[in-house]
Image 1: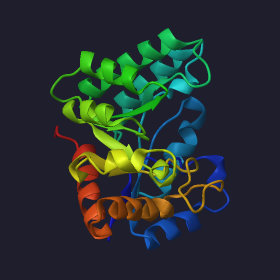
Image 2 (image 1 turned 45 degrees about the vertical axis):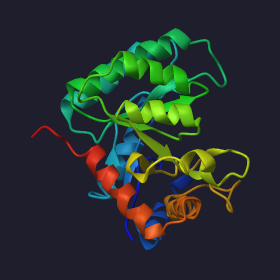
Image 3 (image 1 turned 180 degrees about the vertical axis):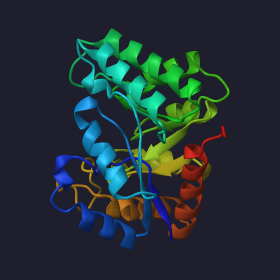
Length: 258
């Protein structure tokens, strides 16, 4: 059984003391590829170093996280663009909208998202979207900017059936992580009505740890727990979940331009 973690921050300091063991445990659980979303320029060195340490396993993205949008966001975006010009990346991300803690930079978040959408189209890369307390708003931005090669993942999807339908109709995938194991989240019921053809798996390590390890550091080996939960919800073999979601990830992250 082969699994792909489409969203994991294994380069953060949470893993600096035991990253080799974390990768070994993940490999033992069937996880063979790890996609690393960017946050901002303060984490770029660590992100690229991890990719270099595990070539063919870890794949870096380039982007600016909405929670890193401050007064200097245009300078940060310039850094992202410079990276995109200089080398190849697996995706643009993570970008998006986050209105959970603070709405001070709401307009700037929209500007940064739209700029990164333009780069996803220009460089023909998938875009990975963060949508905390802003799922519908992000859907609306994607719809407004939709062109044929704009594609990607609504990371950490935890929305409604209606929102899932809108996302799928836009040609995007739902990134499903540990939230699906949370009893009162309601995500399992939504996922039960979504075809595996529209789902990819993620951990968002070190965050959003699945049950029964909730409250502890998340890691990519726990992706198997998420796959098992989806299999149980849909009453299908976990191998089917692994096969389809891994194929989906391969299709999303492959470059369509030569």
